[in-house]
Image (cartoon, rainbow, N blue to C red):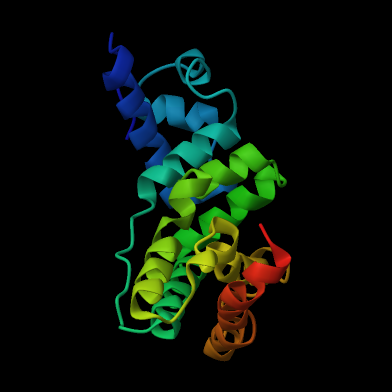
Length: 202
């Protein structure tokens, strides 16, 4: 539904543009998102959009971030259980219609690191937060050494899963792939941090 031009400014206008972009992204995906359509839906002009978002990709990322939701951190009582639940949640997301939009945006970003960080809807530290949380609980239970509490170690499982979608192009990852990531890569890496820290160093 087309909006009427108004004299909205600042946060009110920005909110109207974002809402319109979210609606367009939901209905048509990133491929169908255009500045013209968003401008018409928001009842503004393209210049007002370009002043806030320099291109279609930046606007698409902002709209996706509006759609994305924060998933509660699981607490199964074991590191393996927590990591599997986090991976299963990520797998469901990537396999969903919203995940399809995310894959379009990743492809459009072309690997630009700053855009990838925005696509994650998080800074690097925030992206690692749920993974560090489950590792902190594991350390407290004696399942892992404190040396395991490193963002790159914490997030390696989800990046391996992301590769299944982005690099290999799978529509969804079978549960045995998730189990393999956890049992063959993640847990050995985490457990090895404590034993190797004294010899490898920082």
